[in-house]
Image (cartoon, rainbow, N blue to C red; front, side, top):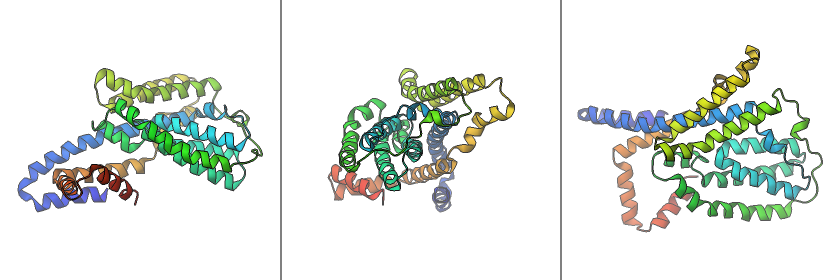
Length: 308
């Protein structure tokens, strides 16, 4: 956030004659950043509402195998497809929490956790709402939902299957003890869990459909989904005490979301907006094109550089 504000401050102080231009550029980039921020806030709130109602136990309760190799494949496949609907970070948290309940051995937990991270990142890459970076590109209009799914589904599958194959060969034996979701104490009923889970997941999946039908920005679709889920939550808990209703409310879910990460992305988006408005990014892209010339090498180099 400091970086984002400083780059705009430096620009406007060094260009006192272009105050109006800087203000216009800032307003333009802020509108784009706000669309992404509102999308992230709504999506995170939906996930938190589902989690508060123990909705993800629908998935975890369906796992009954005690074979470690089979369990690894099941967990990774669930993580792969679940991250395409939620996001890779949320999926990782949910599935790692599941593994901690199933496995006792620390080494097995570490192996499963590592594969869950790989599966969740791979699964989030081929969906417009599976990863924050992809979501920003989709909201910004640089890519379309259909193009992402058609062109990026196979590579993530390969990225998952190769390490999963070798990891599965190292997993031997049975799980010592499986603690199923039915054995856990929950303060929500099965009907409530199922309703919130399917409405919440449906709200997320509906976003690309909403955009295709109405041509409105994706954040409008996710806000519509959150509003609908909000109404369902209020209806389900209408007869409960105020303390219980508060725990399942949207206001409580907003307190639990990862707000620091949202502000982190806001700072990045504002900083990038300044670099774009001052044509620094454009000049850098032109320099790389002139000096390197190969688009594949440029993209690959950026891919290696960004994680560093």
